[in-house]
Length: 279
Image (cartoon, rainbow, N blue to C red; front, side, top):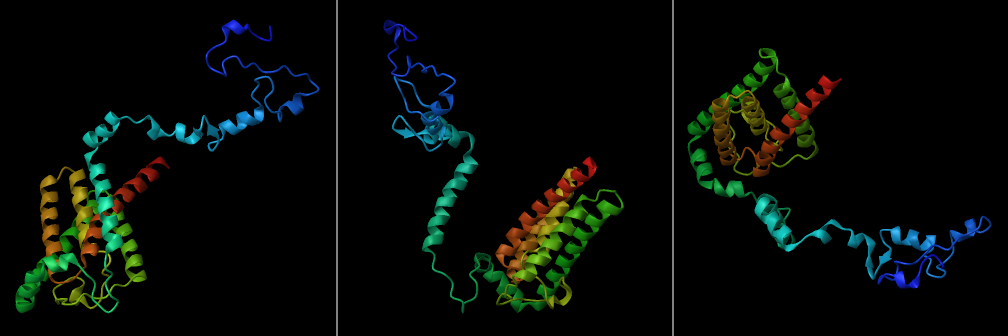
C-alpha cells in the first residue's frame, strides 16, 4: 500500500508524502539525504526553519512578521486609540526634513536660540532697568531657597529621603555634563549680584539646576497630595524660565532638559529606594 491508498490523497502536494523507512545501517546518512519518493529531507527541513529560508516564493521571517497580520481596521485603530504616538511619528518625519535641509550656524556666529528671540523685548526692558533686574534676581534666589528648604525638610523632618536623593543624583549629573561640555556665555547676558549663584561669577549652563530642583520638589508635593503647593511651584518655575531666558542666564535647551532631568532623577531615586527595601 506504500503507506496509503491513492484515492485518499489530498489536493495539497504535501498531504500524502510519507517518510521513507530507514534501517539502522543508514540512519546516519539519512540526515543528509535529499528528497526521495516525496520524502522531505532533514536538510531541507532545517533550511525551511531558518529565518532566511525561502518558503513558497517568499521569506519565512517575512511571512511570520507581526505586521503581516495587520488589517486596515488595525491601522485605523492605532490612530484612534494611540493618537499621541501618531503625533510623535508625524513630528519625527517633520524634523527629519528640517534637520536634513537646515543651514548650519557658522562657528563664528552666536548660537541660534528661539527662546532668546521670543524674549527680546523683556531682555531690552531688563537691560534698561538694572534695579528691576536685581529685584527679579533676588526673588528668583528666594524661590531657589524655597526649593532647597522643602527638599531638605522632606528628608530631615518628614523622614522621606526620595527628593533629597533625587536632587543629589541630578546635581551630580549636571556637574559632570556641565564640565564636559562648557557652553559659551550667551550674548546680552544680564548678571546680577542678587542672583544665585551669588554674583554669577561662573556657573554651568547645561542643564538648569534651578528648573530641575523645582520639578523634583513639585513631584514630591504631588505624591504627598499637596497639590496646591505643587501648583504654586509650577507657576513660579514657569516665571523662572521666562526670567532666565530674558536675562540670557540659560539657553532654551538648558531649561527644557532641566524639566526632563527633574522627572528622570525623581524616578531613579524611587527605583533606588525600592531596591534598598528589597535588600
